[in-house]
Length: 222
Image (cartoon, rainbow, N blue to C red; front, side, top):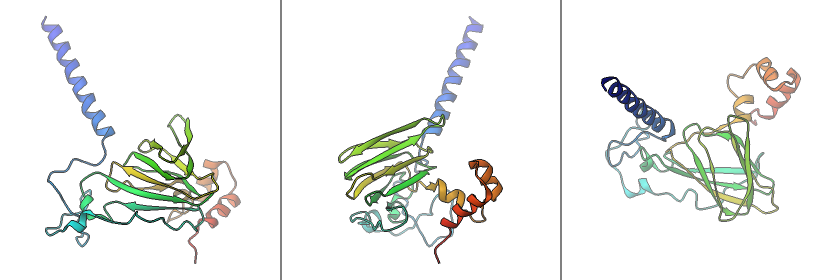
C-alpha cells in the first residue's frame, strides 16, 4: 500500500506540473496585478510592458483608430491598422488588442507570424483566401466571406489574400496588448544588418544573384 501511495503521489505531481506547463504554453500576456495600468509612454522603464502612469482619463481607454478604411495603395495592396497598447494606453497589462486590415482587390497580407498572440479575424466586407501552416507543414486554408470568422494559432505562419474584384476588410482580435508581427519575407530579406547572402541562398536553394535581386526589392524607398 505504501508503494502504491508513492506512485499515486508521483502521478498527481506529474499531472499538476503538466497542467502548469500547458497553461504557460497556451497563455497570452501575463496576468495583471492591479485593476488598470495605463501606459506611461514618457517613462524609459520597460519591464515586459510599459510603466503605469498615475493620472489617466477615459480617453486612455478609447480610440477611433480603426473606424475608417486604411489606404491600400502600397506594394502589397493591404494595410494593417492596430488598436493596441500603442494607440490605446489603457490596454497596458490587459492582454487584448484589435486591428483593422484593409485589402485592395488582389491585395495580400503576406505570410507572417505573431509571436505573442493567437489571432481571430471577422470579415467586415468582401471575401478572402486565408490560411496557416502547421509545424508539420500542413496548410489549413479556406475562402472566408462577410460575417465569417477564422482563427490563426499563435506563432504559426499565416496569410490573407483578397482574390476578389472589390475591396475587403476584417477586424482582427488578439490575446495580447501588443502581439508583434514578423513578416517572413521582410524579416529575412530586409534585416539590418543584412542576413548573409550565402545563408539565404542555401536556405532557399537559390543563387547569390537571385538573393541580391530579392533584397533590392525590399530595400527602403529613397
